Length: 339
Image 1 (cartoon, one colour):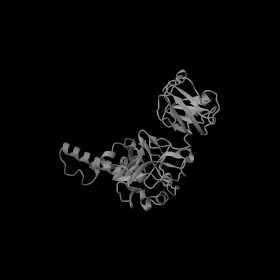
Image 2 (image 1 turned 60 degrees about the vertical axis):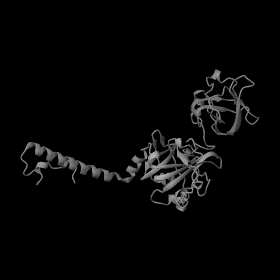
Image 3 (image 1 turned 30 degrees about the vertical axis):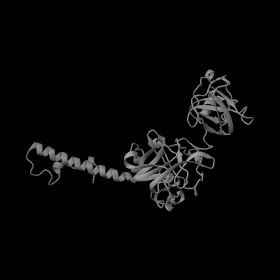
Image 4 (image 1 turned 90 degrees about the vertical axis):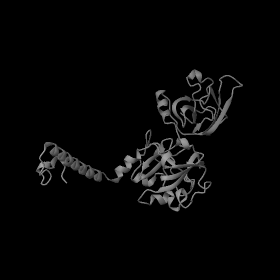
């Protein structure tokens, strides 16, 4: 097969145009031949691209496939009497085993459980208790994976077969999606593709947490889980104010009041390590450090879940009037150990 620029014209090829007498017939025959040549060229180009490119293209195909090609079931696999010799609990589905395979491991069923593993609380685990991870270099809108080849060996994508079952244990169905990959569907949580870690050898291992500063356990809402969750935008905020930066998370506690200056106001007390979600977001008008271990230490308030969005730094962990600082009824999460 020659490149199209070197192909012979149809009328010069023996047996193609012989015996044709009308202009219309010649035109139709030439058009057919050109189309055939173009199609052959396209097939050659497709073959040259290889399967890896196809997999990468498929990985960016997300959408509403869950309701038509997968079956959601509330509860765990055991509660639904699933076949435990397949799916997450199959002997060959453990991350170290999957990493030894040449082909991706595709499960007949998957289970997503909101749970706790080590310092990760909450974090999503599969039906065998292995932690699911997210990759900061992936894209969420649209959902697409950027982990292939050697990356996908170390971090096997979490795949379920077409027509497979998805058991939900404390994870909202509305947060679950899928992207086409390797002839199957990679599970996404709030748009983030999910993976296992090949060096997690037993249930509740968290050896992949914080690897390269881009891999984190995934929370049921899709945010990064655990103590390594920091507030990256806080660096820019500190730099803009000429402040120093200390992003190391620490234990802390704070009391947030709905109405500043009102001693009878409804309050919420939050405690934790690093980034903490507020039980009642978007209602706080004042913040007070709670306990001697927290007084005098910085806290950063964030407008979004997972310490994202707009932020305000409280250098001593206290503000009696968030309205005066332009942050009234905005806080959805906070970070102990800000700047």
